[in-house]
Image (cartoon, rainbow, N blue to C red; front, side, top):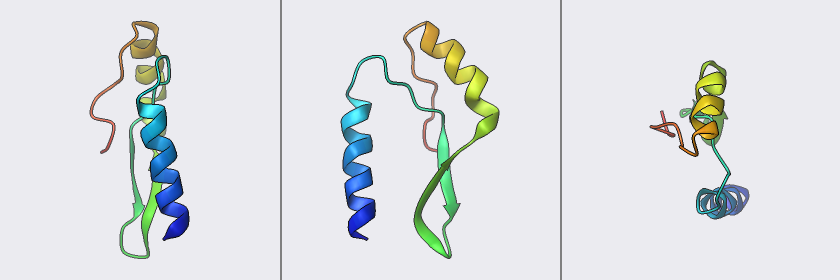
Length: 62
C-alpha cells in the first residue's frame, strides 16, 4: 500500500505539469490487484493528436 501512495503522489504532481499528457488508464484487476493501473493502448494515437493541440484526452480514468 505504501508504494501505491508514492505512485499516486507522483501522478498527481505530473497532472499539474505543462506538456505532460496521459494515455487513459484503468484498473488492471480490481479483485486481485486493487492498486494496479494500466494504460489502454487503443488511446495512444488519440492522446498524441490531442497533445499536439495542448489538450489532455478525457476521461483519463476509464
